[in-house]
Image 1: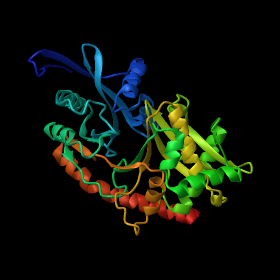
Image 2: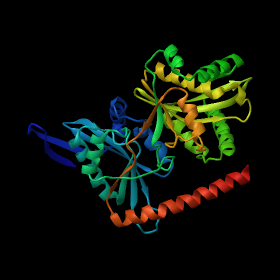
Image 3: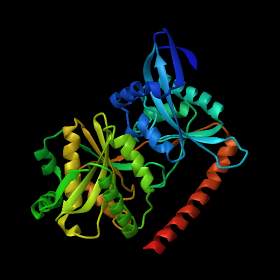
Image 4: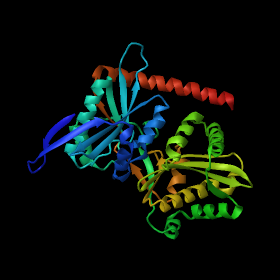
Length: 374
């Protein structure tokens, strides 16, 4: 799609939006990695991970005079209704755009609308990597026709709406000083007890990671994806230096493991798991510290501990997760939330009403299955 526009000085600008193919992968990734709003969920390779899960990746770029100015990795999924050629669009932590530039956002969403028409999409969902207090971007989204969704305080959204983020530009000494004293003690305790942290070297280590993740999911009663999902993460993210698995070993045995992602100057803690054994040697604290050190050595300035509950009442069952991440002295951060751009109001209404019921029933069945296996 080609669109003419004027800047604030009345100069004519020509923008082009289009879906790219694999021949432009490196160019696309280079833009995402370098951009302030770049995110691992917007990388080409993440689209390939999701492709294995039944999504079709549609990397959309906005160019001005041949230069990429904005992008949005759109994931498409067909509605599972025979004979109905409809789909949904989702752009995780997208778009990658200057959040102060209304014109770029408008043209990018107009381009997405054209793609949606070609693919029968009933709506586009986004959950931008933008903090809540950015009212300017919220106003831009509203002007572009998007509507805000309320997703609650826990993990009702597709991506977590509340996280802890740590500025890791200070020295290691300062980072340790800024932690809660008990967290420093536990990090050093793990070292004194002989816990060693190493990076995964191959898919045998990936299997060790997944075995402990399964053990954790049964103990803490949460659902996990199948092993093939983590194989795709290994093949597309780890092998391309966008991710790393860390293993904590004690007396020759893997007792905890984590998965971290990195894009540009940002790193994310995505998954963590621990064995039911040897939890007293505090491997999880040392794992986090070694991941922070790894991110610093990669040139990162921000380390994201990912999701926590927005309800920080101590009676909340999720408070322990909040407390663990808070102890590293990160900043409690709320994002701008989920926004939908509706293309088909009728189908969107049906989707919004039926989906929650379907998800609730599916989760109940899977939880019952896990309990039986335990």
